[in-house]
Amino acid sequence: MRKFLVACRCRSGRLEKRHYWQPPEEFEETKTGNCVDFALWTWRQLVGMGYPARFVVGKAGKFGEGHAWVTFEKDGKFHLLEPQMWPVGLRMPRISTLRYHPATSVACDRDKLSYYVHEKRDSDLGLRMLPALVREWLSIWIRFWIRTITKIVLGVSRRIFSGTPKRQSNERPE
Image 1 (cartoon, rainbow, N blue to C red):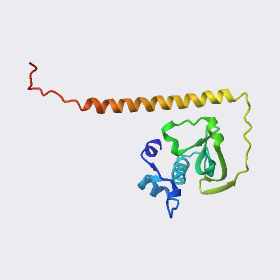
Image 2: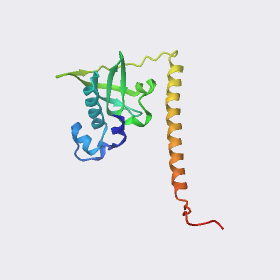
Image 3: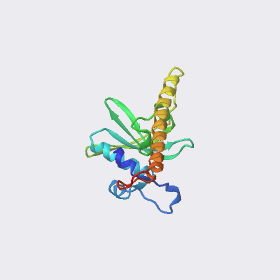
Image 4: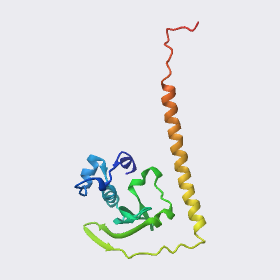
């Protein structure tokens, strides 16, 4: 799933005159879409792999804008999967999930669809949990930036040093 999402491009739905939710098959071809397209495709993949999963629409982010994402259950734990955050890795910091506010969701159990309307929730975050959540957030983001900066430095180094002329075997130094 992650390898496919790496190759996809995000397109903001606000700039277009007419937009529709792409069927997952079309998203696989175009590899371009907005948060709904990413989430629908990811939801279908998880359901196909046998995970109990939900396609969720609500508000998220710094400004609380409309957004779509996926939740799923694995080993008795529920996870929020943000398909557009693939560069971060498979783990999303738990503290980051506080910015997601679901409004409605759809679950698929074999041939049965279930629809849910979510109540507004209060994030009752205890102060005792805060240090652990901040440590987890820092750990995930520091690893992300170390990997990213390393890849950038290696990529730039390869370009710089691959441009140096090579001596041909028949030339002799004088």
